[in-house]
Length: 300
Image (tube, rainbow, N blue to C red; front, side, top):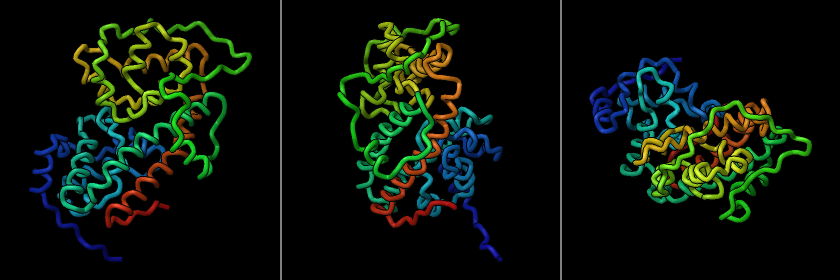
């Protein structure tokens, strides 16, 4: 089989770098970004390294029609794992904007795309709640849409999971948590959070304030603390230097240390992601089919 040769446009690649400051030309294709990407780990359908290489070759026409640029969570895991500090998530953001600006995808996609992202956090919350007690082995289409479209009960309430009968909490050996008392509720953290949509599902400010008010018991039993992507954008944005992502991470550690979740919980959660994330990407594909001429298909 003879394959068509690629004709790189290196100047275009340099111009993209100039507009994104993504350090894409420092990539040496080690693949660390792929291994760190939660979407790749759950589905195998997003390879940040692929985007970076295509950008460096200036393959703009192909990039703008690449469904993968819409799968990115902006979690910055690709950056945090990269030895050269390349930022594939910045390329994805730029390429989405360009796809709309150049008419490859209609701007009408923006509202339903953002709504889907917000609604998907309900699915993640409910999958996490399920994993507190048992493995999620399957999810029917009807159940998926019920989880996706149904708000949590009582939008103003902070939802917690009741411990299973007979559960004994262990004393925590985790150091005392930073309580975030410097927070003055300006909402910078929530406004920049890529997954904030409904306060009852996930709201960095609410978690930080609950930590400051010593509501540890409620936080340790909430699925919300497990939704954090660890992107650190809340910490970067905070004018008071409150490290929201670190507060949440340490509550996760305490939940394990105190026996709120068992040692297998994180593995059950990873298995659940392999069930819910493919359906999430399928929903994005459906949106792309509605608002563009992009052909999407699920890899075999």
